[in-house]
Image (tube, rainbow, N blue to C red; front, side, top):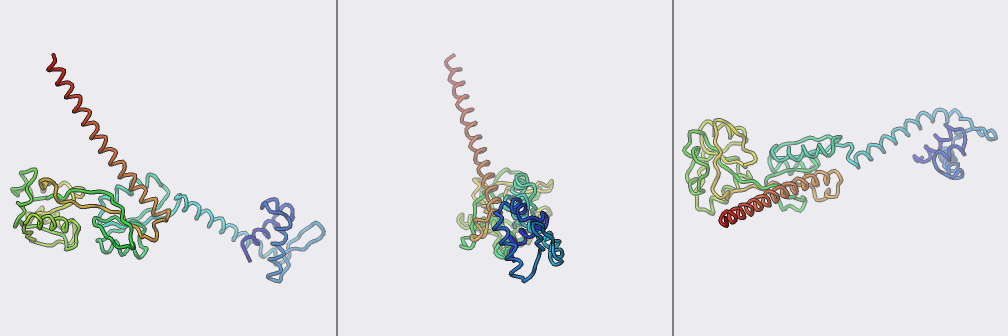
Amino acid sequence: MTSAQLRAFLAVARHRSFTAAAQTLGLSQPTLTSQVQALERQNNVELFHRRGRRLELTDIGQKLMPIAQKMSELELDAHSLLYNAGVLNAGHLKVGAVGPFHVIEIVEAYRQRYPHMELSIRLGNSAQTLADLENYLTDVAVLASFSDDPRFVALPYASHAVVLFVHIGHPFAQREAIRVEELNQQPMLMRERGSSTRLALERVLKQAGVTLKVAMEIGSREALREAVARGLGLGVVSEAEFIADPRLRRVRIEGDPVTTQTYIYSLAERRDSRLVNSFLAQAVELVEGRHHNQSQVWVNKKTRSSREERACINKKDT
């Protein structure tokens, strides 16, 4: 039994005519008749009494009709579901992330583009987030570290300077920036080993010959902020993740030598998925828009500088 055979039966049952049913389905009458006959022959049943040009449903035909109607409705529902998912009018996109900061920006833009899509965000550390992606618990993932694992595809999304945040009573709180060498032997409150921010800082300090003094390891951003706010040590965070607090001051490291890079990951085997690509495309659009705005700022500065130079020249001439 095929769906085409059931559609043929249902059309004939509704119209009580092979000719009218064939016209409704856009088939030739011989094709439609053969489909109904095949359904009867395969199951050794008679679905219609043929009385000249008149057709009447047999008892089994009458019992089959409501079932065929339900199956037809389910087939239509399945078609609608698949079509809407294909054009992203419906569906569920599951996003993994190590923090809410960058992922919310993309999710907000994605919701505006695809308002009928359902989205959910699953937070965890880098290892857990990649494991969720590998196990299909998420469709895409946003991480602040790079992995060259061939199972994944990584798209660069954003780069941010790592900054200090200190208690308002700390001497650094009175300054806009400090030199990296001034971090030597300072009591630092750090995330666990493997944290992308910590790795970036350790790499720069090692190159500068600075000794990192870890006063305490703290497992969450919230607890780390509270510890710094109570004066237990200095913290570092991606500039995009710093949350203003009257008890804290943000202090830059001169030259911004420490940076973190945010990447968007997908499974390599799902790279051609329409669902996955829709999220990656939205991220690319945001990146391109950011670069365009930065270029426009540079052009405006250059134009303003040229105007100022001309004004200066004209002033000298007068």
